[in-house]
Image (tube, rainbow, N blue to C red; front, side):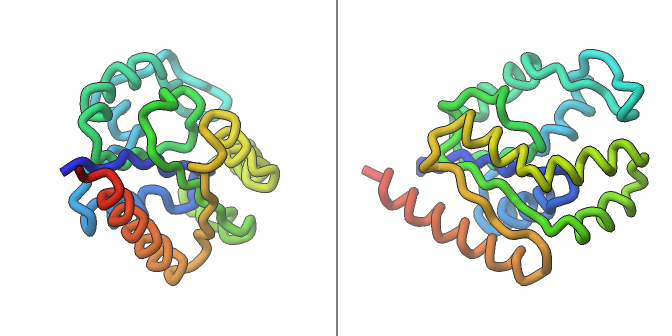
Length: 172
């Protein structure tokens, strides 16, 4: 059975990983967290001292994912989206979280002040939503609220319905 590829994106802390893992468990699709993939394969191109994190080697990430993406049925989770080939995804979900909630989540992660401030500004200005709209066809990019547990459940149900419909539409 042919299954779609889904991109979950948004500012760090909006709930991409929680949503992606739960979605994969309920749909039987494969879940790929790009941060974990990069860590396991050491797909880095240096280190960013200012943000205290490794710099992703985007070309190597794309090479690493190419085969599984062409098979379909993959949920990809990453806070950036402009380097993935447009042909990979059938739908893109950008998660959005209220700034005060997001601030608490990122503070809990131990983000330094600059990283915290920049990520909150990124959310305020909807940078990742704009990036998704610039990188993919507007009709496949959707924003989802991700503030409270009910949002998670609603998002899962909404995406599962979409997968079911997509699968029906693409089975011959």
